[in-house]
Image 1: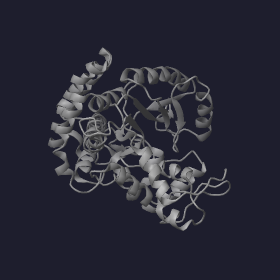
Image 2: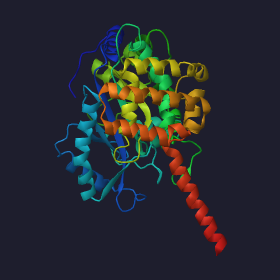
Image 3: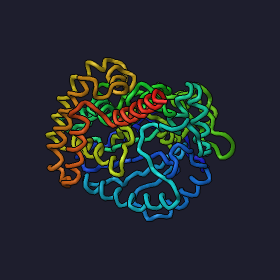
Length: 425
């Protein structure tokens, strides 16, 4: 690893302030989609690491526009290029999936959209130094870290930070909107009610897993008038997860914050490159990376299930009329959220457990989805995309349901059949 010059604390803070919110007219949209990979004939059977490595080699040879990666538990991820329109983003990912899915089927592998693995316990298949260090770090907080790394999957929508100036598309309002609307999105698209075949008591177990991790790197920064300053403090005061090394483990001294690392220079002076890498180990529900990464949506079932959360989120963030409506709809939720940061505050906890059975979240979701449906034609969304959002709204949102409820209904029906079968014997 090449040696980089050490920099001062002030220089690093200035660097963070310059890159976290890159402001301007919202023009770009992106999506990162994860799937659980399973044996096509038996989803309950974990896929051997050798098969996953072979699949990775095959898939990386495909002419994809999206970046293809695998997560520690073998989850497949496609990260789209930044698109200048919702339609362009959907078309690019759809074209890539038209190559990826047949290749996976030819290898006897399936791709399942669940926020949390419903079949078996976490099993790590990647042994890179980053993931070795990450596992050791999160093990200090219990088993949730391994579940997060190896058993969760999401649809992560990326939107531009917005204008520097205040207003419906200003970056300050979009930052607050993301943290309030995020609970509504988590509830509406909740799709992880089980673990190892059993109900967990939550519609989105994935959100519960995230809330049980190291709070210094997975909770939201404090909300306030200056999002940049809050983010800089958050990053600098977060513990260092790992120190990259040419040889040997990447372990970091326990409790060492990045700020302390800068001030002490021990075990070596950090660099700007170290800071940039440190940011990739922070996992708040909304992460500013120039743009905003919304990280709270469970992976969705169905070949095109990812399109609806992408379209709804894009509409509510990038159409000025819909953005203003969404902000007014979710602003009262701040009282429910209280002073605690997401996802550990009451609003996000209610979203994780009850999803849209919660009256307040249900009312907000109905209004937000109506605003999104009105905005999609103005964003140039196709008739097929508008129809998919309308169908999801009617099937779930209007009825106070979410995809997790379908899984629970099927599970309870199966259990009922088993009881009836036993009684008849």
